[in-house]
Length: 440
Image (cartoon, rainbow, N blue to C red; front, side, top):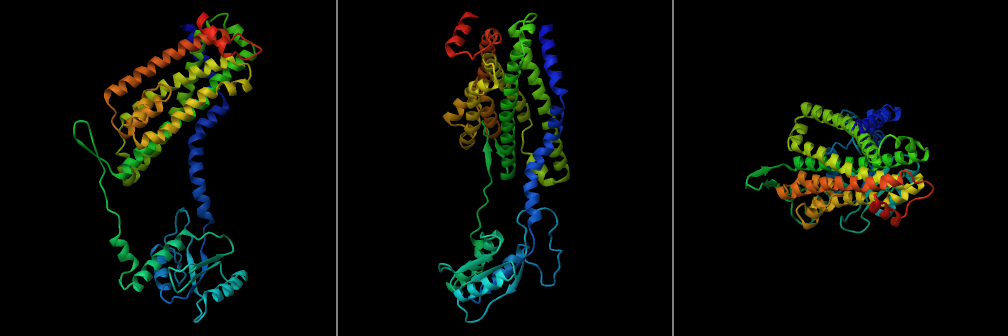
């Protein structure tokens, strides 16, 4: 046992002391925040006030359009006051300074030709032509030098103005606000019912928070299994190619070496994961303490989900790490390992994409079978535990099958590892691997 601990210690310390590991572990959370924040920042910095020329040939839609922009804080006040709440970073927060470009008696085609010329001269940034019939084809024309896309704020304000105009022409006498109030969606309170018949009340925001957190946990599984699994595989190949394996196996059995290597690298992955999860919890708790809305959303998360996360991670990582170690032992180069590892990687990818179907129907036959299959169970069972209440027998059977899969993968990998680690020159064929398993 002391030899196994020596291998574990070596694998752990060698990797956690690497500068690349320290930098990635410490900067990982910051990089993730930047990936999600920078697009919002760049889009916010690129937004600016736009000079929009408005030609209203209907004579009635300009005012509803202007009012809709103003209510959405998208209209620059005529007095030039810039205190319209533009602080902070927001996506698509451009505001518009309207100029009346309407000429009485002008046709839409004439207005379009005239405004194209003045737009090319740089007198304004864009123009909007509103024709007399809101339901006619080509009634609305938006021209711009920078983009052919109609800004969302302009399109929404124009739609509300068109609704008001249709109501006026139909003799309803309702404006867009009144129609919106009449057609507003109903609010349904989602209630989950436990097996005992007790109600578990959840708001839509809390529900979305739980689902988002489960997806985040499974994404961590997906990346960790792939990244650190291939790390184990390449570590075995490197030691084979440098002939260090022959020296090590003179004082330790192949099984002991494999267990020590997998455990040591697994602890490295767990260390990195602990740092990242700790940063995520600190940010979440800090946000919950300062913002009541975040506290309300987080309150819907069951604390036991984090315990299941740890259990699923340890079992799932053990299974895949052992399989990757077996793949590394039968290969002699990275090129060979990339092809040999594809079946193992395929199971990880399939398990992740199965989550989409499981989220829609967590109690379906497919979801139950996928949560019991050991190679997909860590991800699928965690998803089901987050969004529903699987029967106790399904949870127990899934855990039992995962534990059995760990021992089965260890048994299989040990027999392949004993012969494969000392094989050089070529990758083993499937018949050869089968003979190793039978003879070991």
